[in-house]
Length: 518
Image (cartoon, rainbow, N blue to C red; front, side, top):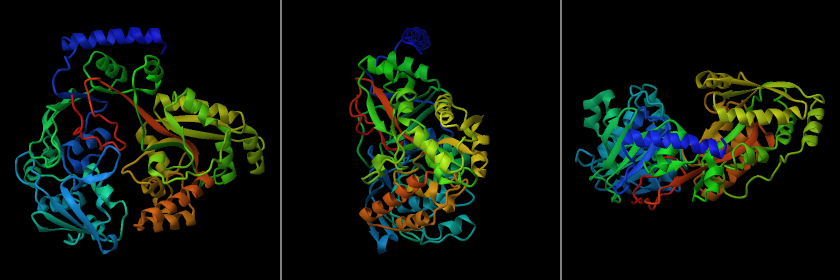
């Protein structure tokens, strides 16, 4: 959008916003005003699988441990803990938290929440977070509950036993689905709990006006650092241009800047906050079918596309070219050495070596997304330069996911967002042969050495050794090229000058607004 047209559009949008609200909000209250692009489906931790639901559930519910803005594990309900028996036993010591009803949180509440998440009758899509617990998989499959999974020693002590050591287990416990719920409220409200949750987190639900706003207020029973804010207001605003207009008239305090708008904000000299996302974008190749079963073909296509130019001109610089699969903030250095610089001549030579001197035809599938279309049109042009004809196929998300889970497309454009901040989450789901299909490995990639390394890393508690194992596995995957490696996205936000202490969190539920002031 050119600058003049953008100004006209925003002028009209601002007028609409002002007319709808009567006037711009004064900004002198102690409520932080935020926007959600999609409305939460629930505030029940056990069913919080989308971004908005998980973010809200994490503000309302405490976990045993939590993430800070840098995705480091910090204490939450558990004031301290010990890891014993070679990583197979965890002892958590609780400290003084209360639910928003005023009742104290006890170890029995933790056990109840763990059992509820794992219970097959709960039908939680996130039960797998606690799968490492002793007997958890069997219980979820219909067996009796094993008290060794999670046991209350007294009101303030919980012991959990694992089937095997899991280095990232604390990170799993910090995810939204592992939030601790109030048993009597869950049993009283049943399915309605997701609309009226009762947690012990820093915030409690004050109002939920569907399609309009969710208002949170401080929970006086929260056991951690208290906030000086009066509340958090989350407006439901799906359209990005409307969000921009709301920010510019002072009705929002934080705005995620769309990539297409970055040049405008930079030119205006607006201070922007920046953070790498825990996300990787790629084009996956179906390695089970020719010609993509030949690594020379996959490497050739990586050499054929000028990813740096796409980042500069389509993403407006909001990305870092990927050399590998693990975002730099989670990877121990060094990153894999560059293997695929843009070189069409080298790409043609590799294709000829693989038996395709005149190229071939292929399909690249995508879900409905305007930016994805622009990216793939650029990729399509680069591939044509080396003789490869790429047809772009667009499907709505459900049909797209079903197709890639079944291994139907030749190739597919997709991203992967961290469930938890650990290198394991970018390697095991995506490249272990045990996860082929809907488990995450949609390229059908198989490498026995990678499987062996990932298995060894999964139970390794030595951080340096574990990091080395993941570096090795990532290097092998990068060499094998089951993907056309693209980029790690970056997020940009602009913040109202009345706000202090706000930071973009590395993991989506890592900002609890306890250090934010107005």
